[in-house]
Image 1 (tube, rainbow, N blue to C red):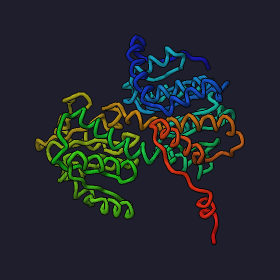
Image 2: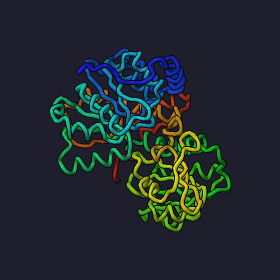
Image 3: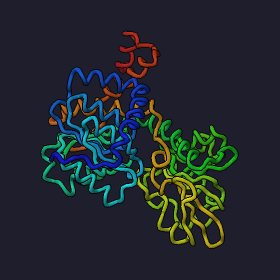
Image 4: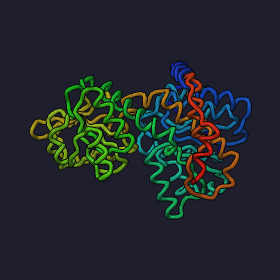
Amino acid sequence: MNEASKIRCPELAPQGEKKIAWAREHMPVLKGIFQDFSRQKPLAGKRITMCLHLEAKTAFLAETVQAGGAEVTVTASNPLSTQDDVVAALVQKGIRAFAWRGATPEEYFQHLRLAVAQGPHLVVDDGADLVALLHKERADLLPQVIGGSEETTTGVARLRVMEREGILKFPMVAVNDARCKFLFDNRYGTGQSVWDGIMRSTNLIVAGKTAVVIGYGWCGRGVALRARGLGARVIVCEVDPIRANEALMDGQAVMPLIEAAPLGDFFITVTGNTNVIRREHLERMRDGAILANAGHFDVEISKPDLEKIAVSIQEVRAGVQEYRLADGRRLYLLGEGRLVNLANGDGHPTEIMDLSFALQALTLAYLAQRGRELKPGLYPVPADIDIAVARRRLEALKVQIDALTPEQEAYLHTWQ
């Protein structure tokens, strides 16, 4: 159970600590929770395994959970989102880690297995790979798991299927569905960080070009919003007629992807589905088109189809692969089709993750106290936690808001 950490570049710990210190100073909500946890120890005696994108903001969450009295293990939820210097800094603080940047699929799942083998009482997941592996390979550990929380839309979708099929064996809280998560992280966080990753890795202008956003959920809305702010024309591709109407009313063009394919300069997938951009779309794209994925797994842009139609493949910039086609056209895939904001950037802005990770920390404390009372299944974040995080942020910003009068409270609670 007490396996030593498996990381690369432990000598980079001082560099990683500088990154964590910067994040810590710009996450006032989580900083307040860290102080509370240090005094109250709500997680004392608990082993907690976290499968998340291992960068500076996540590191401060891990520190906060450790301050709450937990024995913490971390592993990566994406092979290209790990920052080795940050992981080294965590290990130096006594947090067990199994992760390194650029892990092969085999290494990635071996790291998950090692993390699960620590025998967690609570889990934090991002994409549900950790929970799925627990159920498929380590059913012997399930009875001791009190519960867990899920960070992202894709993971929540997988958990809903597990719950519907009666497979889920412990309570999971859908942190992704909290208002302080999807209204900010999914929209403003994804919107800014996706374009940060694209611009950082390509050094190309966005203004005056056409961005095709595939999927118009909260993340897709954010990507489209920021594209327009940068001066791009936006085309939205959707399968949901309600979201398509919403995109139209937001001022976007809406059409099938097969029609948008010859028009786009940037293509960003934000669907959580598989094979969204396929051969028939790739064959119609203009020379120089940029392909980026902002969904959790690297299956939205069909890499097998790209490889089949390419006559040569080369990395032309860090995180930019050029696929040259037989007719001379070039298509550029960013970050190997993985989450572009983390593979080619630093992920969501620090202040955004302050809200998301504050929810995670308070949810873990709630589960440590109440988890055994809950039946297996998927649960929302308790409303009082959602409201508490929002209030803490307003307090940190020194922003005051109105309160309902007793008369107004009474008015809202009567039918007459």
